[in-house]
Length: 382
Ligand SMILES: Nc1ncnc2c1ncn2[C@@H]1O[C@H](COP(=O)(O)OP(=O)(O)O)[C@@H](O)[C@H]1O
Ligand SMILES: [Mg+2]
Image (cartoon, rainbow, N blue to C red; front, side, top):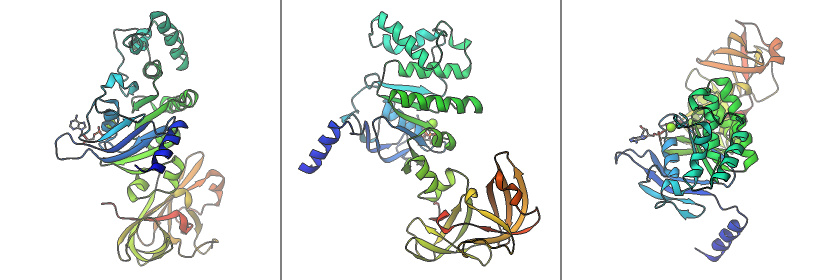
């Protein structure tokens, strides 16, 4: 380590800006063949809400279990506050955990459940009562302490699990799909509650979900997982607006996807010859791809405008496709229009409800338009 590097690291530590967790080249295989977590490098910043987002089987839970200490990495090292974790057993890591199935002790009261992490740590009984009460208030369950878990709703049980994870004031809380068993309305309410709790307590959160809307709602940063690798690590806004590859673009938000071949490119702009029909469109080249290579083009439905054929729209002539308007779906706050493209394939267009009356009629011959910066071309997914 050079002097400048050491100084910088020392400074970061003094400022409290050293990452609370560092995954350094972490690998995990259960069968000796498949790398469920593959060369993972990830810094978790102190106080942030970091979400691991990815499809089922992408390695999210394994990553969390490695951090909690319930699994052992087969390569690399995890540092917690700068200290290697490999020889620290789970209970000495002082990490709070919340699981999807709540994992409450059914024979214990709510109070006893929440007290558990304190009693195993030898906290005096008088302190325990006070801290349990405070934790219950935090999750808006004051007065429910004497009940058994079975006497609570799913949402209330999950709040107890959250209180139990908070009560010993860990610096780090891990949550693995904690809202997965709740219905949509309650899930959305709990998302905001957990987010507010995080903001109020300043605790670092590592949260796992396969639900992209949940990740966008709750997180400071999102790490998108696919096949044990982080595909992109970014803020929700950056992730949504500037996906870095076709997988992230497909996994987050809605997309119109088109296939083609890269014809020309310069300075990030490109022209793509579409596979379907004899058309070319302009877009933004996101990944290094050679002319002639197959690319996937992705375009958010809300970035597309629609007009009856013959009406022009200010904009780039290479960002337009012809089609016919097949369907208009009214969704209260917005409308969706489904367009069948003349060149083949379909396009979804999403417009605010205030523009509903400007849409052409069903059956009309139309053009769809967009700006080249919103049309992103990626290397084809392997
Ligand atoms: N204890 C285990 N033994 C063997 N394979 C496992 C074990 N846990 C998970 N896996 C496998 O590892 C892969 C990643 O699983 P997991 O980390 O649970 O993904 P996720 O949480 O993203 O759904 C999956 O293919 C899964 O079947
Ligand atoms: Mg999982």
